[in-house]
Length: 203
Image (tube, helix red, strand yellow):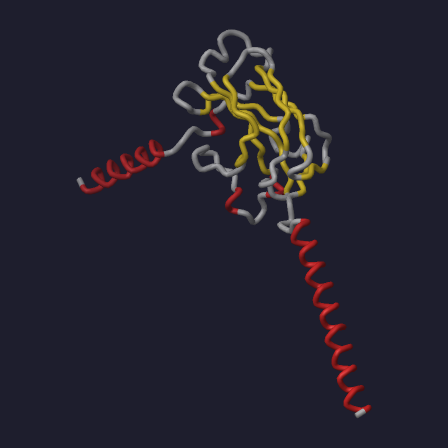
């Protein structure tokens, strides 16, 4: 009797855990085609450069494949090389816990025709290697399909972003000015002291 109760409890626990999760990436069909106007290994400067994104339905899918698509979000995603030893960028099959794609590049209502958008690399994007992925959402706001500009292993069509180091030109200028002022002050102090010694010697 106890063994049956334990089995039932474990079953209910597993079902509860599954219910608390989100949509599984592995369950999504890859029905979207996504391209980005970059070359493999190209380096983009955060806050300066931009790329053109294009996405749309893969026309090889027939019927009412996109009937439930209401919205599309195109996201900037970390490539595997930029996820190593970084748990806060970890890929998880449960999309509610996945940290692969943390930057929304564009969010638009879904249209059957291909769409394009020119995205400027935001200053907040850190240095790393990236690819682009688009998710289609239904009326409930859940992911129902995806597409990406890279292959399944996320090893092709990758590009680099060079983030802002944190130092600004104004700070560098202020630092130089302060150093120059300190040097002039030191030289002035040295000359004054020399004049005092010279006068005392003459007297």
